[in-house]
Image 1 (tube, rainbow, N blue to C red):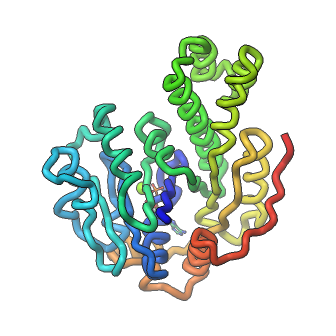
Image 2 (cartoon, helix red, strand yellow):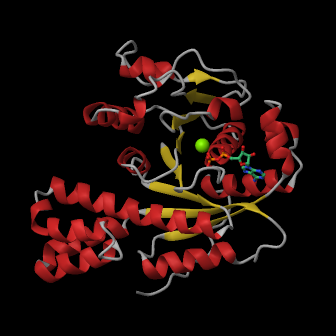
Length: 307
Ligand SMILES: Nc1ncnc2c1ncn2[C@@H]1O[C@H](COP(=O)(O)OP(=O)(O)O)[C@@H](O)[C@H]1O
Ligand SMILES: [Mg+2]
């Protein structure tokens, strides 16, 4: 069965690309056929984390219609079973991609013939990043323990919900009904997409519930990267509890990834960290996540806050 995971979180430098590359490598080593898609349009760098020079082709060739399928531009890497769709060669203006092109890319990604499709996203909350994040039914949010990163991740989460709601309302031709409230929400006058749902439910309980179900069906996991000894060990779980209480109860904690100076050194030397330092805590944390994603780890009993 094909599984798609998007890896996002709002803040640059939190480790999204490092985690995407590392999970991709470990899943490939598990015998899965994996493709990494570099969707940090305009600032792609996944190839560097795989120890590679600039790939000779990627998304650009597909966008320019020089390839008939997206699979054709998935390049093999030095790791057997692992492929990369790079966006390095895309025009510098690629970040302002046309809507129709974006839809074409989104559909093509959903149909890529791989066991695992990992989407590495850029920072910020622009519409492209949110739309790419929403390609996957399961999203991984990456944060670090710093308050700034946590804050950005919460903003990113709310933006994902709001974008999902907006697109669904437009699709159902209901956008005009609550345009005023959506404007208030985007200006910060309404605190959360949940407030908007309450307004919708009050106006039309039946349709309102349909939108509520759409949002609560999304599945998210949180990763706490650059974890160090002095950080509260339960921070990740506590953050997930806050998300489940204040957003929708759709969050689980995937785990901590330990900080290791050698990650930086490996990137500078263009070495693959997990290949060079396989016996570190950081790699064992990543391996635990892979066991969870492949279903090898027993599911813990899920205790979610009641809303
Ligand atoms: N677990 C970690 N331990 C130490 N350094 C890390 C770790 N994860 C990421 N880094 C460092 O953070 C930098 C930014 O990571 P990157 O994956 O490029 O972030 P993002 O894609 O979120 O912008 C990397 O260049 C690396 O030096
Ligand atoms: Mg990145």
